[in-house]
Length: 201
Figure 1 (cartoon, rainbow, N blue to C red):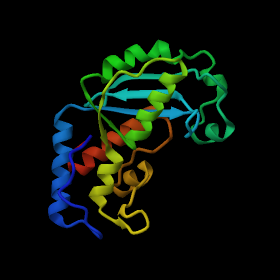
Figure 2 (spheres, one colour):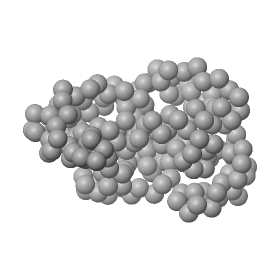
Figure 3 (cartoon, rainbow, N blue to C red):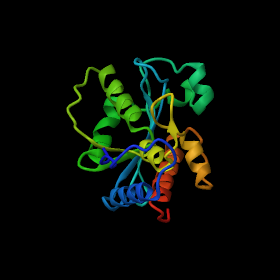
């Protein structure tokens, strides 16, 4: 996870704190991150991964695949990502794709927008097949970092306001679209992190 900032500021970020966040983003990028995004059957404890994309630090695709789940994709989720049960019918199952995924993630820092969600979905999908999760992976949550970068205090949550990936992209004027498909969203996550760091993407 990213290192903590020196303070929480109830209001707009002071310039010094924003500079600190820019430096955190630049140091993270210098580690040659991998970027990950998943699409899932839903958001709850029983849900699992149905698409995963992993991009290398330069934006090239390391891995992309649909994943056949253990149960039917609900219509409510199909309306979001447009991945149908017919699409995944002949896709590989999680135990088939996981060895390739693990080899790309292990030993690298993994950037994701709302990283705790992606990690939880990887673990839940693992559990569906009674596989033991043994890996300690190094994650950077780009959503949390962008929240600190914006520095808008949410008095109800008593923390910095969170923003969607789509909103972060729009705020930076990034032309890439949040399509709710794994490859496009991983690419947009990379662009947001580079924009925080004030680096080209």
